[in-house]
Length: 304
Image (tube, rainbow, N blue to C red; front, top):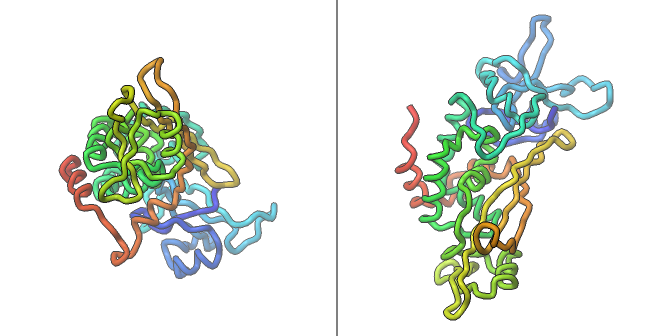
């Protein structure tokens, strides 16, 4: 059971399941309103995490336990709304299944849902990088973004078992292993910036000539060798109060192997609405990065 829904399987916003919102978005029309075999009217929408059909419970009839209306998976296709996808359901955080995965876990089949993930990465790569950069306070350069995407492609990241349309930026960071901070840009006065100054005195943080809010990392002229790297690990998700709580951990270390020193740790909370809502910004408000879009177009052929 969950309290959010979407109304389309393509680049959809996520909405709270409430009577006034549901009626405004659907205009009380099919395929959202359907008469059943006994001529009873049922309401349907789309799962915000797996694009499967969901049935809305309690929109017009009170629920015995007094709870508010909610959605539950409907294990059949709804014509004109969404095709039922068993594999997507199996790995949905809202399903009855509880499948634990790691970064090496991959789905068995390439279904339409995984194709949408692939296409979204290809067409919205600049926004993927923007969301990830903002979350970790690291301005990911075009060259670093290219290396990350190459690793994602080699590992078939669109088949990662817990990949969704909503968590794409974080999954990219999670599946691309350890990444160097040398030569990267750190948001000035962020907790990460302060941790590097405090715990890595050999690191030089120099204001960037173009990105005025960021400092670029290098080694001080007479400083000790530095080997600053970051990774995004520990993908977890759970249903709390009928909503998916999904997190990862950002770790920043100096050194390698057993000699690596942890200098910073941050819990990343994944907002399942933010990325898709960003994609749905009106064109006049959209700010795109053509160089990143071109990188994705070069590395990821359009699926046929």
